[in-house]
Structure formats: C-alpha cells, structure tokens
Image (cartoon, rainbow, N blue to C red; front, side, top):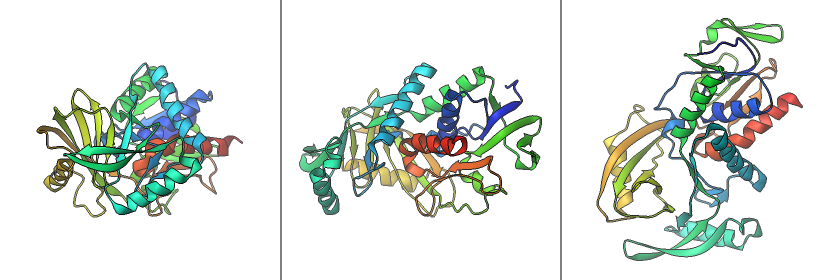
Amino acid sequence: MYTNKEFDYLIIGQGLAGTLLSYQLLKRGHHVGVINTTDRTSSSYVAAGLLAPITGPRLAKTWPDDAAYNYACALYQALEQELNCSFYHPKPYIRILDDASLQAYAKRRLADPAYTNYISRMSVTINGKTLPAVTIAQAAHVDTTKLLDAYRAWLQKQRCYIEEMFDETAMQLQDDLIAYKDIRARNIIYCNGLAAGNSRFFPELAFNPTKGEIITIKTEHTTQSIHAMESMFVLPIGNSTYHVGATYERDYAHAHPTTTARDQLEQAYAQFSTQPYMVINHQAGIRPTTFGHHPYSFWHKEYPNIAVFSGFGSKGLSLIPAYARMLIDQREL
C-alpha cells in the first residue's frame, strides 16, 4: 500500500541492493518510493549471509580501505535498531588452510601489517585430523530474510512501498521528472538484479550469472564459529542448525535446487564432521554476477537522473553499503 505519488527517488527492487540504498537515501531526508515484487527465491533471500573482511582463495580484503567495511557493519547495526529486529550476529570465523596455495597466501597475509587486525594463526581439528587455519576477526552472519522482511514492513508503515512488477513501458521522461503511471519522481535507480539488463536505458550491461545452492542441516555437532574450507562453508544459525554451501555454477538448466548440488554439498560436509545430521532445507538462487566481477553502479550519461545499482554477486553484503553511499554522493555533490 502507498499513498504518496511524488518521490525524490524511485527505487526498483528491494533485494539487498534496493534495501541498503533506499535506507541511506531515507536517512538523508529524501522522499523515497520502492517498487518491488517479493521473490523468496532471489539471491538476496537465498544468500547464506556470510559477512567477512577477508574472503576468497587469496584471503584478500573485500575493501582495501578498512573504513568501507566498518561502514557496512555499522549500517547493519543501525538498521537493527531502526527496525527493532535482530539479524546481525558477529561470529568467530575460522578459515581452514586445506590447500597449499591457501597456506602460501595465509603466510603473506600474516606478515602484512595491513592485515594485522583481521587475521591470526591457529590450528583446528577436523574429523580427528589437525589442520592449519587462520581466524578472521570482525565477521558476522547477516540473516538476510529477516532483514528484507522487516525492512519491507517498515517501508509499508512509511507508506512508500509498492508491491507490483515494474513495467518500464509505463515509464516516460518528462523534462526533469520521471513519470511512472500516476507516480512522479526526480530520479530512478534500477536495483532489480539481472532484470536491470533488460532496461532500454542500459543495453550495455553484460551479466554473467552464477547459480548457487545451499543446504540447511540440523545436527548435534556444536560450534558457534563459522568454518570455511576450500569446497564449502559451515555457518551456525542457531538451535543446532547450520547453513552449508555454496555451489557456484555457470552453466545451469534451471534455477531450482538439484540433487547433484545437494550430493556435492553433503560430500563436502562429510570432510568437516562425521556427526549424524538431517537436511531440513535446500535452496537455490541466481547471483547477478558480472564478467569482470565489478558491480554496475553509475548514473546514465545522457539521462543523469537514471542510475543502475546491481551485479554485486556473492560479496554484496560487504560491498553494497559503501557503493550505495558513493552513488548517492555522485548525484548530490
């Protein structure tokens, strides 16, 4: 439901990108409208919710500038207070060095002063075998389902949420305004993932989507730490329940969960624990990744009040907050 028909910014999509961008605009005092079709199979909902300052096979910082990562953590905590909802859960993060190249990169990072506050050496026993590992500080689990649902309810209370499929054919440019049906907006930002590539304003967008699958298990194996190995991560979400993931598939026939991916994840989990478990959920989502692994975040050259904000892939939780701030600054400065 919405009652306002004039906005400073009209946001298309309320996944992680649309949520974190629109929130920052609202906190700057702008009148914001969000058009969205709730899709619980989207990558934002299916995301395991791992937030960490160091990621990937090279154990590299998500952001060279520590301030950008700290800004992301602070934004999630501010949103928790705003929404009166608990979804940001700091957790120890153990990266098991089960590969020679990982061990080599870990050695470099441990000797680099820029990583001192984030990484330290340790060992961990997995299935009776002691393995080298590092612990990564300032990591967290972000429950994206809770975040997105609570934020949508909050937007509805603000009367600035519109639940419908966005139809670009109903959009017209009128001088400095954008007309969409009976709505008028000074700016519009496409935060609708892969669908942004279908816009007539951004034909140059080239997505390289990847399918990801995770399983959720219940087991008596107890750990409060996030564990990651070369082939998977195990993320505790409470009540003896864990996310295990994730697969990365470039060539896929459909967006649904597959037995092949489930078998792959269960085989990977067997390397971590021999305790009995039960799979209680299996999800799949399509990540809006790009060929260069660089997100699309820019204002249109010919139409300076139209922007795209998409393509953040598996690192969206870390990247989106600071990228959103930069996009807003580009328009307002």
